[in-house]
Length: 201
Image 1 (spheres, rainbow, N blue to C red):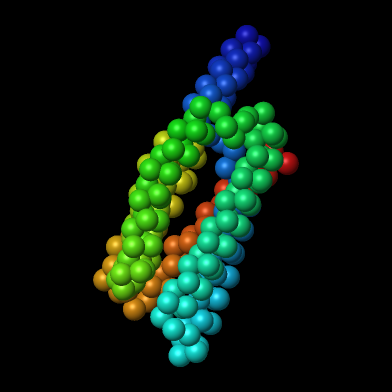
Image 2 (image 1 turned 90 degrees about the vertical axis):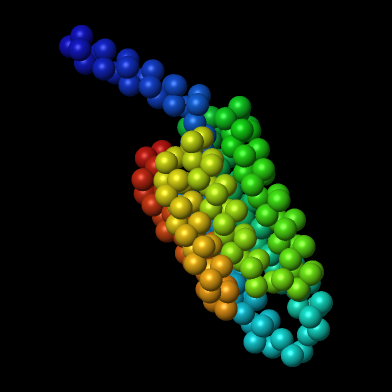
């Protein structure tokens, strides 16, 4: 009986330490929605490219940039709302010290990638934009995995690999975008939902 109580106490201590050093509020459902947004955005871009003769180069770039911004905004809002809900359920805050470190790490990788992508878009070096985005995003996930679930680490390496392949196969950039930002998020989100989220329901 005493051994059982000791084990329960150790388990409670481990859970408390994990909550204080890890950001465990990431929602699997947000990953699924992010993937759906990315695939929808890719479909819109494909539609535009099929009718590219109707637009000037500048118009086409502006429309694609607008689609990317909408997808990004929806992804951030959805991730924020669902993660905040999951944090409440687990008694955490999405603005704790660990979460702030994780967000700063993400920003450090993704902000330069965004600026570089915009510069490449408006200097007619568009063929490598998708690979740059995938590479930086994959690196950012690998970097922040230490703050959260280890599954993020493996997802980061998958996206990094897609970015490397895309740099040699730029004619298939939209496919690599769909795989990296669309399908990867849906698969990851589904795994996260059944592995972690449902335990709190």
